Length: 360
Image 1 (tube, rainbow, N blue to C red):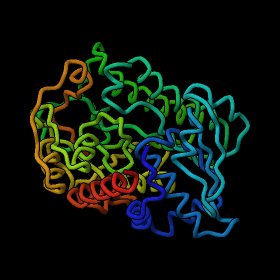
Image 2: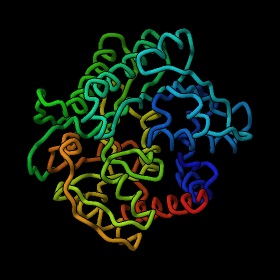
Image 3: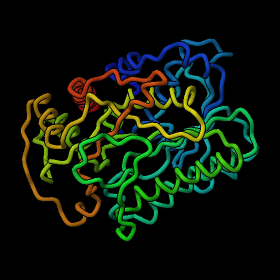
Image 4: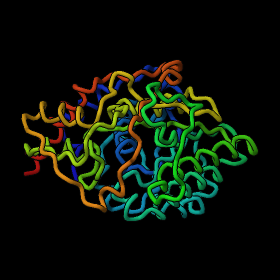
């Protein structure tokens, strides 16, 4: 596990992930519950909140409630530090933390738990669908009947389905085909079902929940075990190894740097409208998988090797050929991506390379 908190370059990323004071003012002194805290986006978010706490007086610091499956692992990922604020640890899986937190008050919650790894889609489709659905259901039940509680659910652009070679970017009202009888549908259909649960609880019980549909996120907080193509590309590049391209690479995606994605979640916590969904994407970072690999190789001075994926790997691949998302709706509430694709790739490789050198 990377010890990013002690990495100077990573600390600079936390400093550079600037947010306007009007966002922070809504969060000072609040209790924030985050599931999936050790995942790529939420781990950066937790670090960002802890870093901000160090600049605040005791009464203005944010308190974090983190349900995690493995507290020992989580405490290594988020080491103790003076002034970082209080963390309340809750050891539980996605289906059990609601009971343990019954009666616990919180102001904000982010539902970020669940598999987002193609290898897991292929090997554990049932657990993938259950995890993505049960985690948010527990939070919705906790928020039911409570006033002044705001939830943000982390969804995905995969909910749009496959629109073929459609040129126009996906907007929040779009919906296309997903073959429900393919096990790979565990991820997009699990997210679709979870979004509908959010809409249902908002309509029937008045739960204040908004949905953030993440595009393809990349950055230094990806776990080494992450089988997503961009995580593998950047991990190889940081080690000075050739990047392995296991498909044609023609599929076009929207990408977004993890620091920008974490900032977007805070914007939704403060300014998002309940019952609404928002694309989280950088319109300046749309490219094919092969182009992303090329940028990573160029930044690291390595090459690209085309190789065939195994059948089990292919089972986890998305069949969507063009997954471009329109961020206009979230741009309208003030958020815009600040890190270009080239710069984000370069920063990620530099951080991972320095961490590899630092830890031997």
